[in-house]
Image (tube, rainbow, N blue to C red; front, side):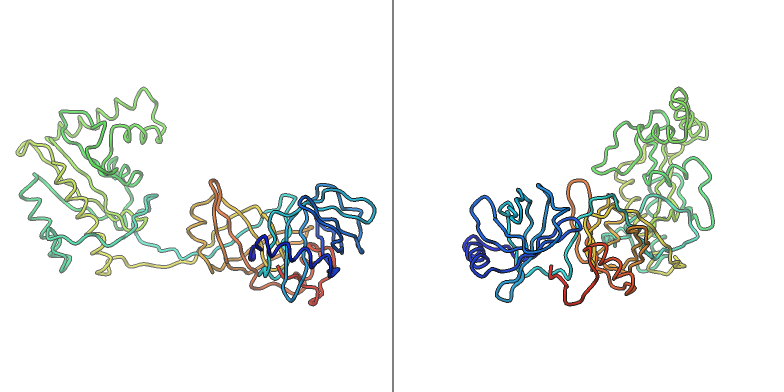
Length: 408
């Protein structure tokens, strides 16, 4: 916005404005007056109107004031206290700024105005099922438990561990497959491990892990609810799910998903049957979970994920807060948009002003947030000259003249 002026400098500036009869540009919503400061006190500034149409000037209007003094440009925001004849009384501004760095004055948007933001995004395409769970793909912690010198050795080390620990184990890869059975669909939807400690007991109500790693009874119920299963039938379906495993001779069971980005690559299955009638331990589950992350990373490093990259377009509609001839400020609630719009990110913007649709190539120059929304300041990088003149005239209510450019 510029550099705030301190109290001592502020007093010097106001005195210089009065004694030097410096011209002030007072700008409201589609109107402009030229004036000069003739008196001031702690409450108000008394200005003489030199020229300009006062028909649209109203008491309590918010205004911006611009002036130049000793080769510096200054501005402040304030409000009209009253007007009597050619005298304009302004409230003392809370802040006064110098060396403001915008090329053109900002105009607040009083009517509802939306922009359409068009982003071109790189999107990977893999022949695996998609999931709403997005695995970050971070490099897993190195461990002596896993031989990562090659995929074959990694799989062999896992196999040796499982032979000593469980009745059965396998790794299922989902390339060119869709989730078919109940367990596969659960993993795709939730991103969590399915752990049946014992088919003699119910699914755990609370998972004994420090993080949200395995499905609890409540997770199962929520999934059933999402599938539009009636309330009275959900418990029965879950009990039958466990019973079907019991009659197959399964005592304890784990399904652990393997993800890469937002793809369900496969899963690790282990179980204990009647020959090894014991619960699969929490320690073993943590080992399997870590192995799933190491496996995903190793597959990536060894070129297993042959990717096709498409350019896709995403469109967002957002309200405009204020606008100038060189940029605008808009807001949105989308976390996805906030992640996508980094500083200097290029984007295309479409919006309509007074019935005319404008297309502007832009980039992000600042961003901030409050409790509820994200805010983005963009600068126009490319605009048709005729569109620029049209925008300037609609914003400032006068034809464009290069020498009339405001420094703000």
